Image (cartoon, rainbow, N blue to C red; front, top):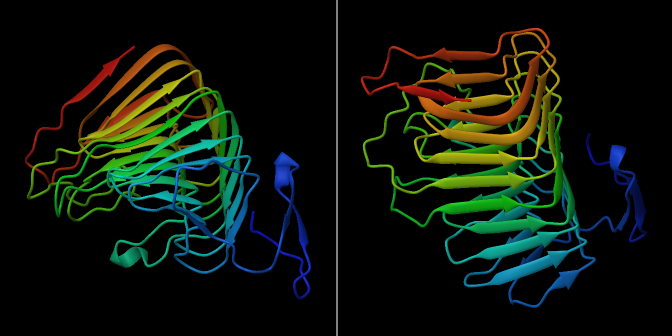
Length: 318
């Protein structure tokens, strides 16, 4: 699902965004924005093609508002939306956000090309009719992350209401990802059941919260999770959400010490080795009024590694 820009000189390009049938008119030049005040911005078009170049950012101390925006990035490690500290807030409504790059420099921690990212104490609220796509490997549709390794920050928040539809197509991607200090030897996008230690030498205090009310999540790449809570203080709440994973090895729900609460929703996995849920090294899963179908695998898998001495308690309530 890469971005194909058809442009000559400064001419405008017409790009058809896959299944969404949205026509965007954008120049062949970089057009990112850093929101510097509280004035609402409507009908903006923001594009970046360079690596590690986010399309929409928020300045320190600002509560920003964007409406009916078209956001695209094609570089590796380039977010569509970035809110990256505790004094930044962004409201998004009726917008289309798409990334097609992959993770950059994964061996050294790396940066994903996730579509909407709130991190390190930032806050994002999404309402209205939003479409979110990530096309690259290891990239999330929505990402809420925080790390206490240097200093404790406020809880990170990413919340949606109304109708936000999320589609991922890359391998090892995630529809919605909450990550809080997953271990000093691990990254937020490491597999839920890898054998790397998830211990930390510091107390994990800050939460990564991700709440989604209404809409849908679909992952199409192999080993791609629908919802992933990675780390002790990672929390995901889904209410009235249709969640589907299509490919092999793609769990609908993945938990490594985190917490996922799903209500009034439907879950389907289609591929092989794709149970409804995988809980590894402890965590909590809550289902209420949920219809879940795994077409080629079992319902819930609980497992643990032998490399950590900490408790690996798992809780499931339906």
